[in-house]
Length: 310
Image 1 (cartoon, helix red, strand yellow):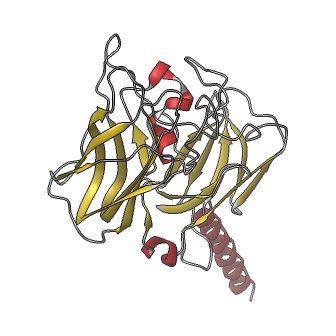
Image 2 (spheres, rainbow, N blue to C red; image 1 turned 30 degrees about the horizontal axis):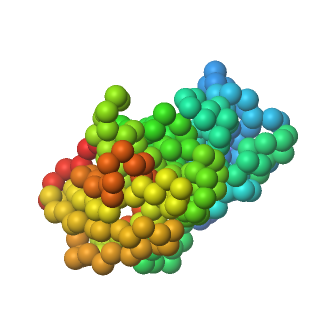
């Protein structure tokens, strides 16, 4: 009896260890589904707070170098701040890495491209969950990402450009896919942030905007919102959109603050690039408030060519 009892204790302890190990590696016990972990990490790489419940409450002011890291799932919905919309992300390495954007550099360094109350104070709530099958299969704007970070990102969609006016955060590539579409009025801070490249002359990198979807998607519609400022009067009357499959389309926006749709032939791509921008008048300044690509993820379909590069 003693031997049988010892065996039962051994198996009980072993099972507990194995189940605990599964939990730590990101698997929810008894569900067969990955478990998401939310972590706030400081500039030194140390963990400030973490949670595996789908919600993290942080009671501490953010300091320079802090970042939110979400791990454990490829398709994840993250709400990084109460003033942000939830972002539906594709994370092929099961990692979302979001630097807290309170310390921008360059011209207009104190002009944030996000709501001014975001990330402020000593109380923060971050949530993350698995994306649902209905969300993943829905026809939607596959380019939108409210929490796209500036610079490199392991999660998608992601926008990038070699040309951002004044290196200012309010004119960075990420603002063109953040979901904020206010186009009329002053454009030096939220909610009228926009991707605005350098004007030709002086610093003159290619005036191009790349949106990377991170995997094959099937799209059949584009939409844009152009910066609308009657005082300055500049806009792109024509733009070429090049796709990773080698195809391209030319769009011709009108000068207004409305969302403008462009139906295109259905295609499977991994990225798109807005290039060959034609301004309405020389030396005027133009910008995109938002760019969109509508469709669905393309299951099992492989693009013919590599993604376009900035």
